[in-house]
Length: 82
Image (cartoon, rainbow, N blue to C red):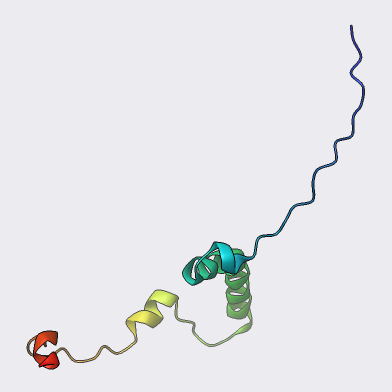
């Protein structure tokens, strides 16, 4: 039975990539939101516990935004350029 010597392997220090060089702006926002989404949920939950006012959920709030009136017929962009 052989004895395996204990070897300490030192990992190379990790390099941090500059996010602006690796990801476009939309991908950066998506990554940041993914990191803070849990915190945002927690703050929203704590705020609900402390508030006596009724709270709208995000879908309810979006449904409450008034929509602009629809035009009688679509406008062609070709007629605008002439």
